[in-house]
Image (cartoon, rainbow, N blue to C red; front, side, top):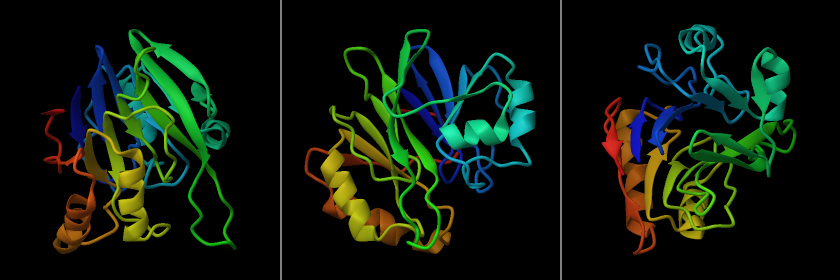
Length: 214
């Protein structure tokens, strides 16, 4: 598996010969020139996960990519965008994509809760080699190899992030969704996750826009 992080929640995953770009949002950078993508996957409709000013150009530059997203985003975007519901299974070449979760974490009880699809990548025998939860703390039912874990969010306390990391207990986790905090504060959040992870989980930060073998 090869992974590149383009800031906040935008991640490019190359697995089983297939390239999937997740959540090209407003707080992310460097994904604009990507071509040859097999799929673009959006967990939910918020602008920090799908940038309305750049998404059309990205889609145009990747005419062969399948466009996968949560049901509400599919309705909003229209066109070739496909709704992926929890439990849906898709095949992209040798890569299996399984939908999970379904709802965004609660920001405040007075605010509406939008759809959020957790994307799980892998194979028939190992469907959770990689998991991108979007804005949720949904725990897959099968062992996870690599988890992209939200590190900071207006809907989450750091104690909840730690508990989520422990509940999933992946082989390796790397932080996403920290574009909302100053760079000087990254170590506070990353340090807690690293210090309080389970012993069998490796915590690793990824260099921006640089492919890393995991």
